Image (cartoon, rainbow, N blue to C red):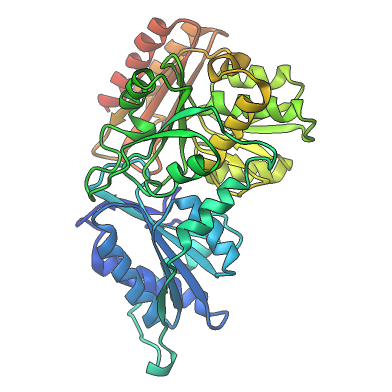
Length: 442
């Protein structure tokens, strides 16, 4: 079945334009409720990030679910991985997150987690879509769902995060700048690190509904780099609007991305005697990560871009660690989804226990220069178009065996992503533009 609404990360779009309208959210809540209610009385958790539109979508989803006879627990502003965790602990049928992750506040989205805290299976999303084409039928009044608010949700998740650090390890002596992206972690992330003993400077932790991800967070690191240098911090931690991405900055102000963080965590776990033979990245993962993992004697696998695809390969290979350069890192023996705070704690554990600073630890891998060009498109583009393929062939011939080319469509935005990786940064810029120009001309 070709899905009409669900993309690689739920349903997402600009508020006020289909499908991100209150009437669609109402119908989506009812449709999800109908699928879930097939198993009898069900419980659904709803969390959201700090976008102003979250109030509207939350109310509409709530009404639809109640109309289908489903009970609800409202979590309020809560990181995406927190909803995944709480869905498991409350034995809920499904967890729903209202968020557009790293997108600007004008966008929003809805994504679902299974009772196991994993992304909802494709077949369940397809079942929900079949009900979206039907007329809403409200259950009898005595079977309507009920809604309650969980007032201690943040505290529960904070304690869960703290347990990710070994009991004998504390963060005493570390000065950390934490950038919360004015998003869902604003009331959680600083407290996790403070309660573990760190000296914490919080930035972008005052959400107003429209400043989420604006010049801050995991997708905009300038303010974090400045703050780390200004406060003479040991390192900086940047999360995105819904808290499932991690980017870091070392004491010199240099960026440590998701690939480097994954390499650091992998190396530290090996030194601690952890078992396992497989690490999962994506088609976008830096060649330097692949080489570093292979030097460690492990197998490196590339999944399609998207944490659900990383998780799929992790399950197939029984891998404990996987992630993306953008900062989605899955620590599978902790939580079965990307979690920025949990990943940061794994890196901090390596810092504390190794006695090395973050700048030293990131030398475990040598990054190849990558250039990524996002080409915004108004209409569907055929990537097999002759002009595009001729440009790709030309670039690949010039790179020979010194790099890689990747061309793909975004699963969440009207973009074609052009990535060129090679030994020389300037060359990758020039070659990426050759392909980007070909895409723009189609």
